[in-house]
Image (cartoon, rainbow, N blue to C red; front, side, top):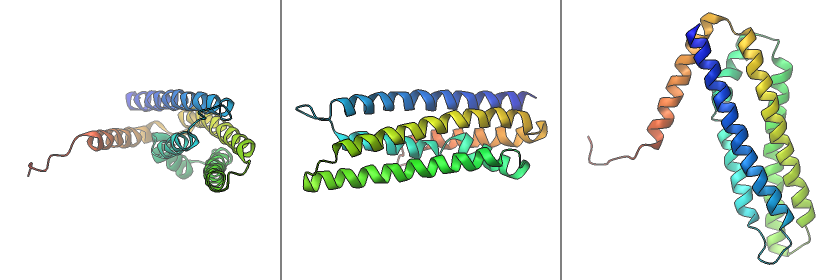
Length: 177
């Protein structure tokens, strides 16, 4: 019971962190879109890189690494939601690629793709937002359908992932052998 509680709290904290991070990125993008045509402009490449980093972060979270595979194994009840999340993820990646291509084209030719780039960025943000909403529903579903005995293994995976993340952040010392 305690491992289930730990795991669910860890998932909810991760979701809040992802939502907070996304909200911050979205604010920068909306600000950038509004000021894109002003003198001094906005660094679209930096905005796009932040979205790309967020996309990569999403795929390293516990919900992606542990919960989705667990639900796929344990129940068919989550299939529609998991398929939608997969589609939203694909849509986000496709939109990011599209924005990157349009940005490169705009930089090379000076073509007036600014409005198109802004629309695609807004669509990408909408896709991320929808994905985060649906993931919250997925966490609630996981809490309900994953049996108590399975949560121990999930908690073990969470602890492993947390330890791995910490090890990646630690400085490497070449003189240690």
